[in-house]
Amino acid sequence: MQVTITAVGPDNRGLADPIVHYVTGVGANIFEIQMYDRDSEHLFAMMLRMDWPTEQESIAVLRKHLDVIGKLKSLTIRVWARDEHNRLPRLAICTTYRNEIPLALLRNIRDGRLKAEAAVMIGNRDSCRNVAEQFDVPWRSIGDNKGEPDNDKFVNVLDEFEVDYIILARYMRILPPRLCWEFAGGRIINLHHGLLPSFPGFRPYHDAYSHHMLTYGATAHFIVPELDAGNQIINQTAFTVLPGTPLADVIRQGETDNEPTCLVEAVRRVVDREVELHFHRVISTAK
Image (tube, rainbow, N blue to C red; front, side, top):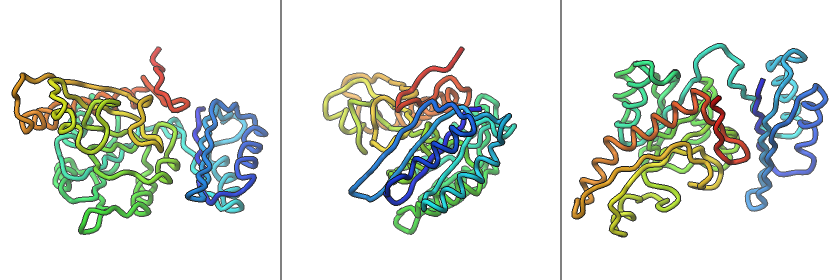
């Protein structure tokens, strides 16, 4: 069974060794290992993807052993396997202001086009609470009165609802590196409201308009610690406008039609296992 392990904690020597030695000793076949050492933050992070021999040892036992290592090494260690439970993948839909995208996701889940479960909706603003209530999805607010998120609370909510995939549905806050590393390995999907890599940043419609573009778009990609990196693209959709189209009309068309379409298809590709993230690159796994 494919299993992903992440370990994050204060930087020190010999942090990866006990994890690697333990899993290989049981008979795991390691497919991928990534390690990060950020001196400026004094933070160590590791992501390990492997084939775990469940006939030798269950994932529950693996998790218990790694919890012991985590306590000894002051590491937060997470063990995640898509196939550990016989259920649909559980999504956390994360929002700020706009409700078009969570509406599209929830409608597609309701209608069976997305084979997933909306486990929880999370917002740093309460603007989309009514969408959660409309679809009877638990809502959790993690922002203060200025919209600044409590990222510790964010992680606690993800754990509370046993989330498999985190969907940033125009969640207008940058996730801190630690959170990205804790849920690394293709578990965080972001919608960027512009075509990457040409138009990154927070105002891609405005930037493209200032370059007199007639084609605009959206990009859904896996999150890695580098912001809007280019090799993690799952899906891109574009639309063309006539010369002289006002910027407000461009944005309206992008937000109400193109962006929801882009993200829904990206999530479908992931939950249907057509794509995965290997070595920071999206690969096709469709047979």
